Length: 181
Image 1 (tube, rainbow, N blue to C red):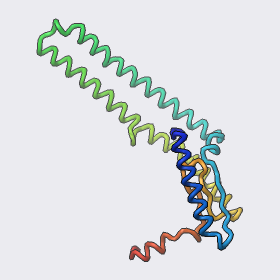
Image 2 (spheres, rainbow, N blue to C red; image 1 turned 90 degrees about the horizontal axis):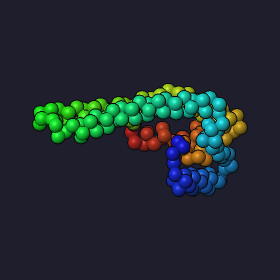
Image 3 (cartoon, rainbow, N blue to C red; image 1 turned 180 degrees about the horizontal axis):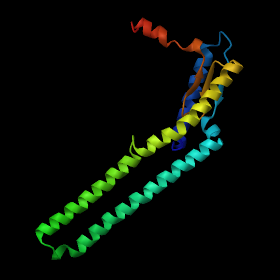
Image 4 (cartoon, rainbow, N blue to C red; image 1 turned 120 degrees about the vertical axis):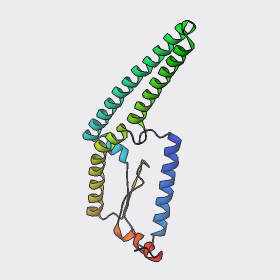
């Protein structure tokens, strides 16, 4: 969420605003209420989100330290091997090289388990952050319904459309036209 470049964010914001203008123009026959919310700004000031993000950052930092220590061990094994290499038999040399390769592979697998696309950090983030985001989205939906908004967009570009009134959702019509259901 916070790792996007400025140019990427500008492109997304421009795309969202263009979409907003297009929707506004197409709906101009009847007055529609449209709003924009910056989800990142809301989350950045929400105490439980800040606390959750700090918890995730601490977990990531701890795991990064563990990984760095293990890579230091691999480097130490390699340095020791380099210093002793000329004194070792071919068999012992091959075994040491294999030990180094296995240790490095083990560390990389640990790193992937922790930080990979479906790794523990991803799962932990989803476990901790999703309920907070759900709370924010629920507040937006309640606000939209209470105030009569038809569409609410995310200004930060991270979520796109935050709320759309039921009268605008034409998914079922398209499914029926395609013979789905």
